[in-house]
Length: 622
Image (cartoon, rainbow, N blue to C red; front, side, top):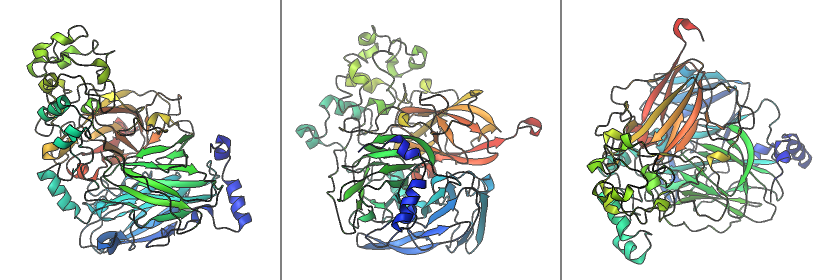
């Protein structure tokens, strides 16, 4: 059932009036669940006390020790209000340092909660008081920025209600915290990844898969991937072989249940608080209208499925009209497992749980060759490609491709190159592709350190903001893409950027090393510097075959999507697809030192982290 945009945007007063007539609690409090805990415990501002410690955590009949806040996983929902001056007292009962970062909240940098960047951390048996004004509203979350505590349960949701009328009308609300849990300690997981990056991948192509066709690869494609020493199923470093996917701390068998009355507008605030998992979210039989992304309102857009990367949030409105249950599915993007919850009119009801879909295959677009299509091959920068191994790409133009050195490009199907399907590599000459040097320093920008930490350089990275995500290219329903997002309110700063900047996301999978521009944070790296209130256009280029959700603390940036002028979507985290690039405009309006990193926890700890420094202009002028 389609929702009228005016209905969504006319304000929450009608919903509040309906609740009053029905004698119900406020919309956000109308929840119900079936499982280990009745509902997410909720704390309200302006004064909040939080205690970090260890607690037993049970899922699927097994119990382990989690790092929790106030003894629960996920941590309590913080229900705050725009305009409040909040005071959050955090006590550490652990035997190690800890911290809390308020993800997506705009605040003074010394309250941001990143040890070694914005404050020293919270030592054992000490209390630290975070205090700051709330100048925004929306859906956010909080988590540790110390060690690997986040993977052990140290995370929770935040909802900041607007000071005035909410532009999104709804009758009932549920907060859905998506996460991943392993009974293997995260330090052991990281150690295994460093020794064997494919340790958790049980979905690799196989000889039997080649013969029975289930791998969806030809022999030539298999040979090509093998000679390039790349794995077309290397999608998530850690997956369902070790993770149980949770929704509000409940595993798929426990079936967390949110209630509704048929006909109600139900707001689902979806937060990906996982350590290493990207999810595809859908509710079979129930359309979703996206109204908010990363805490910022967007023009309503109806869809049937969306991908949510680590640390992103999406608010959607659903309006179930039937007296039946619906399954909420959060499927890992490599299809190795799923989280599952239920929307239902009554507790105890269930709906069919769909099976896992087939494992997707990476394609040449994920190798950074998405820009090498039939229309632009002749326009390639020959100088940049001329240094590739054996001169394979030297002097390339449309007419000379078949005669390129060593037959490198002979037999290449130009049409297949631009596709995203499993047959994207069909027709390629495997010898030619294998002859390409994916690590040729001649293809690197001048500032990149092409050392042991770089095992590939994207030859032709593409802007993939308008593409359906991996595995969702051919599903028979609507899929949200970044270019669908349009800011509801006009962008505050519409000045053109005064300069541009390019940052490369780099890595070496065999050594599980990650960094920016070829450098790990543990090396001596220069911070990324901006002048206060400077307007900069930043392009992130992903030279790797893994997705990287990149998060900038203390700021929102405007994705350059080509959408309506002055209404670019605001984000604090953006997923940069393999072999892709993302451009955003940033107003550096928050002075201080801010973390900038991949939100894949293991990628961040393996080096993909830096500091953004925002300082006043010379002489202190702003």
